Amino acid sequence: MSEGVQHRRFADKVALVTGAGSGMGAAIARQLAVEGARRVVAADLNGEAVKALAAGLSVVRAVVLDVADPAAVDDAVADVVREHGRLDVVVHAAGVDDPQAKQLIADALDEGCPPEVTDRLGDDSWRRVMRVNLDGTFHVLRAAVRAMRPAGAGAIVVIGSSSAFDTPVGYPHYSASKAGVHALSQAVAKEVIASGIRVNVVAPGPTETGMAARTPKVLRNGFADPRVRPYATPEEVGDIALFLASDAAMNLVGAVLLANGGRFTA
Image 1 (tube, one colour):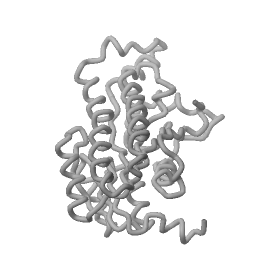
Image 2 (cartoon, rainbow, N blue to C red):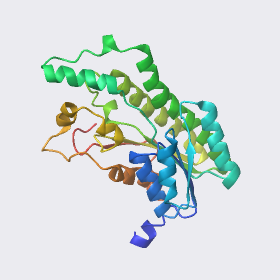
Image 3 (cartoon, helix red, strand yellow):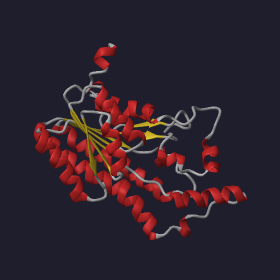
């Protein structure tokens, strides 16, 4: 494929990117704009961040969105279809981690003790991670499928996590949420391909995002391994997501692509 064609992969497409205020979501929204999208709706709970992203990109429109709110997700997708008549691409990158659990793990490592998190994990922490990561993915998938079925076409890419496979000690709720995201996405993929809609997942390993920046140093050091690649950039993971969203991945349906720099295979 020539460079000129590559840069127009999303010519005239209408796209929605969640979690677009930072990290992978922001990188993906920017690249969609560069590659010819007619409109990129960049959605994030952090309104200031997503407005800053949109300020420098004429085809990007910022939307404040909490993916854990099903009515808000439905309204955001309906607005896109009402304004543009269709929705071609959805990249769902919104998600949360648990800084408190990470700190408990880090403290245990500093003390040379095994982490003890599960018996100290509160209901609120469990529900927050599940509500955003798993429920939010369901809300986005459901709304996207409703928008795409009438057109008989569409591409949906979900950002999962390698943590669903290489479950970190002391991080059960995050791992469970992302495993659920993978299974949910694959189940939906098998259903909606009959309607011309492709659903696929990227499962990143350590990536330089705002979430990673808040990770305690001892945990970051634990991910350092001279035998594998260092932390990925958001743009590197974004490239994989956009490949899955492009026509070049037409035969990929329900795939979960590991993007962890060689830390493990599944």
